[in-house]
Image 1 (cartoon, rainbow, N blue to C red):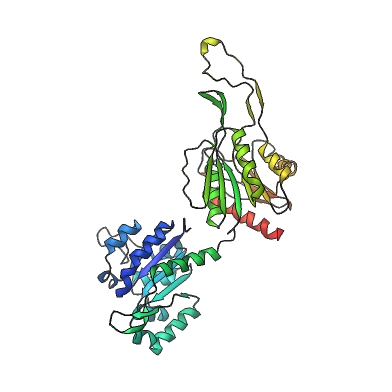
Image 2: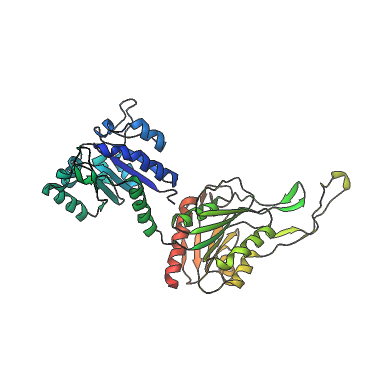
Length: 402
């Protein structure tokens, strides 16, 4: 549910810090990356070792590591996070946040954070209802921060009233709800194809290509990150996909990929056909290995089923179909022709003439062409970044439809 989301948790000096390890476990189980920052006093209530074990990351308490002198950049932390949660937030740290005081790593990162900030106060009831505290809460809300209000119950002092840190499960659900609202493809069903197909000559030989499947897998990840339920049809590839909203169907041949796509396309909102499907297959594949002594000298080929064309012909209103064009000559003209003939909404053009693009690279360089005659060329980027560019363009097309 939170796969790939980066959550920064700032822990201040409060007995309620004992609840944070459970929250970390919930976030990690949901797929989030979690980094903990603690004030020096917070370490008196919950050990950095516990939190480091749960997060799989060193817990940060100071601006630099006293052992090796490595710098902990508050700027990088603030840019890294998708959400910054300060919990429990003591009255002391709250007052410093309001005043813009930055005398520890947690507070300095607050000032550097570009992401949404949630704060969850925890203190004794008289401290929480004090006019100064209430004014500080209002001012943090004015800054655009999100309040996770304390609850009523028994406090560490033995008194009963408001001031208890909200339970980890409730905080977790509030984080889930926030990201759910930020997911523009929530509820949408997507089909993505990736990787090569292998067309068998005999049980040990095949016709194939050099596609690794990385580009299509990154697109599936990018769509899932935006809330989509993705059906990934993956040809032979060593890449392992582990995302709760991505269902993987493994195939080998073009015929298998065709059948897998036809089974899910009618219920699909968005289809991105990134696989490098073989155009031809042996007309008469052998059931046994061909021996050199047999004098075999020729392979007769026949066309494979044109999956993209078949989907374009059955596409109905409201569906969005994206194809790929890998070209070596007349790139733009060939891509525009594919856009028209295959009834696509957008085509992603790759050129093997661009260094670092195409098969066998972790980077790619693309040109996007859509039915609005809009042509956009992007610089060489990692395939994860390219997938994000393609996903943003898809969202733009969906917006135009509505």
